[in-house]
Image (cartoon, rainbow, N blue to C red):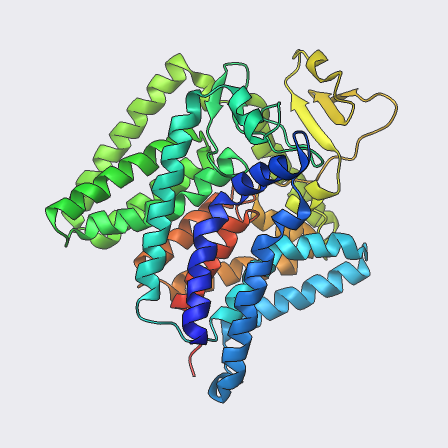
Length: 448
């Protein structure tokens, strides 16, 4: 009975996580009115549900004495990372609030994985979980595509910010982002940003790729799978998340290599390469800003280099919470504009720190404290936990991927997010992190 309850709650969690930002935004508007930051009491629903799930798992584990001392190499790396985070933080900044923020983003999903791989799972859980991913994925992809042309007033009515493309810690989230000055909208559907949507859609994309390439289904089921692939694929494209594009392409190639004959795989690679080159040529000729976003592209180069320099200067790390999304929570809201850009639109937003190029133009009475964002999850761990933390985390990911080689859907899901983590803080979103590590826990139960 406990197992059935836990699995049902997990399916509910997986289904609701990608709707979190939308539900909290609309709920805050209904309870508090427009212009308010997301209510904490609403935002904590997922932590509360996860806590219930983990309590049930603990009771199951405690009842099964045979599992009390189950422990493997993957567990060792997780424990080592947690202990290292405590030690490094104690000897560096020692700020408990910052540590808690960092622990939430870096380790709560990993600890859920650690706990849930110690309980039994039903034979049907994976099938139901993957169905939920596909159904929710197609639903939010469709919603994102439909809303791409809706006016901003519609989103403000729902409770979103009246600005786009900006993150303000004490205000509602923006409903979408735009690419520079060309006005192309990046969809984010029900999630908190286009990158977050693009990364989460890698999950149903991986599942659908495997279903399509296996091909052992009825013609009707195959047509449905192709239709779903097209919908999810269009949504990934419309996020204009280059990291999600790269990860989706790699997932597709690896899936083809694993599930199709060598000759068909070679033909696919040739066709895919030709298609990508043709699309890139058209984009570069007509709308190069889609790919070459000067400020964003420079950030993806300079920020990792800055992170590497910080790691060299601080080989034991700066402590948990000093980089990445946790740093965002305790820093000023900073906006970076290209040289020559008009920044007068921000004059009525004194809470914004505006930079034109490298020059701070607003406010002028104090120096802003901007978040430290390495634009790379592995380097973020390195900044926080030093060289040892970086090595431990990378090794953990490699170990888990090697252990999942025969579990095609879960392997591809983890591979896609791990690739995107080279270019983004891919594990920051709970919809991605919790869902992926729960799916991995189901496949990597600790052996007796």
